[in-house]
Image (tube, rainbow, N blue to C red):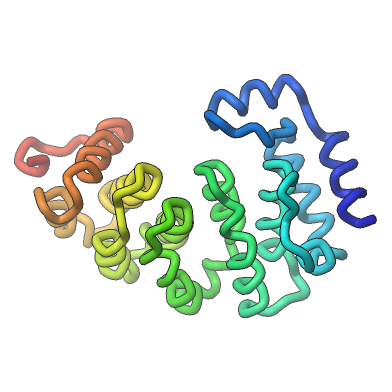
Length: 229
């Protein structure tokens, strides 16, 4: 009954025009209903205030829409009546469903509770960061990018973590490049010293380094010629 109510709510929020637009941004994603992200977040907050555990008591069904999968991942992040350990346990349960860049990145952006628990969450992220699964690794990296890369005391650990992440898969490598770009463009004193390390040939895999250089150009960061090899 509860899931049927959720599906009905999602269908009412669906915008066919937005579905067409979003489908162009996520090639191959056939599960989209077309619910805009602000509306989906508002719905997730409503369920997180009441029935979120009941919704997550069973695995997501094979026919679940993109929006249902994302909402499920948002619920423990938004819930107020929980502990950090329970919150993280439910997020880990839902993470395997975040199997494209949009699901992964939107779920990470919801985990703002991390700002108050960086030490514990960093330890929890370790298995994600060493995973050979493309979007499991990306989840860990994007979490670092959102909540650690711009915090000076965490920069050395983030740099080390980026080097250890398996980077054969494109979306994992792109996340590493994105996070490294955040490190290099954040305005904290330490970054002038670590720039050479991240950009030097051999520190990151060459395909990741090229992605990083592209991200830096896109960010319009003005690096002098002696800083880019």
